Image (cartoon, rainbow, N blue to C red):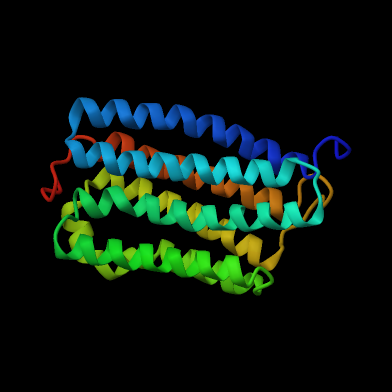
Length: 222
């Protein structure tokens, strides 16, 4: 299989993730249109688009055989898409239940960090693994600075799914940074385990947004 695909397990799992993201985007748009306002449609679309971009970029990077230069650019896009997804995940929460000063400050902060991460990947592709991981995790847990309003205004169901997703992403990031566990490196090593945790985290956050934010009025929280 390695003769056909460069990294088959990682690539195929995230190809499945890209298919899931297309379905998820359809569900997000349907629920936003049925129950929400324009801001629901726009913010859900941003999340769904970044979800698809992340999985599609990862699948392409891991599956195709190409020149070293092409692979390098695909790697950049793959890592950039992670920053975009994290910021895209924050967007519906910042613009719907947390709308106001707290939500807008948080939104600007997370997208600023995403842009910083993108610049890092474009201009320092050989940056240490721990540095990228630190930014990913830092962006993911930036919400702790808005802990009190989040607890008061984000629906309880969404909070639980956010927590589950955050834990999945964080455990995956630790596996990625430590390169451990790495049971069968050729087929299912630390990298493939990280991808599985990413898929779990993405599903949790999709569920939180699609099924717990679609009915929430802008700025009204619960």
